[in-house]
Image (cartoon, rainbow, N blue to C red; front, side):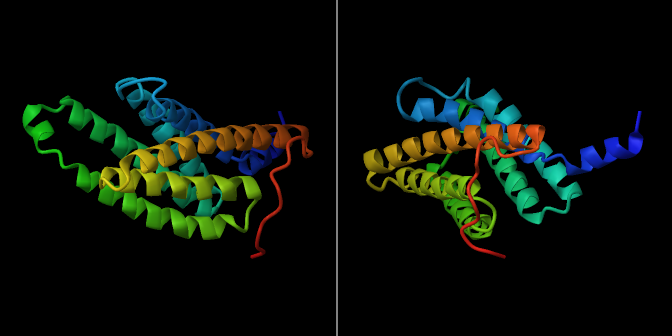
Length: 202
């Protein structure tokens, strides 16, 4: 076995595909609940933990090894986001006891969404220099976070709830495309599914 070539392939492999797949799955499942196709959060929790969180944290760690600061911070930040959301659902559902569940204040979650919106807006500026698919994913994540924050704060609840729901579904579809394009383009060594040129140059 040519270990030197193997090491080169490992270094050059793009971990973002797994991170995008994890994002695609968890947002698809979560969007189904927001759109009223499914109900409850019990069966969203494992997908939030393993796909939304662990898959993106795996991508974060491997992007860090490749010195990709934007990918590291993005996958790390959103991986921890889904873990925190999953734990929040567990707390609300009473898994840690009734005393903790009784102290839930939904507005605190709203402020967390607001904080992540600020985080995401900065990342969107960075992703404008990557490709159109990743940039659009961040744009719709921003809309998702706006919808989540405003609906949690009780602002135009029906409209902002559906803003979050449809934005999340679009994030899922774009992430599926980004995942497929990243894997197949790298596998075949040519563009099978275009990702679009960067909107701005570095």
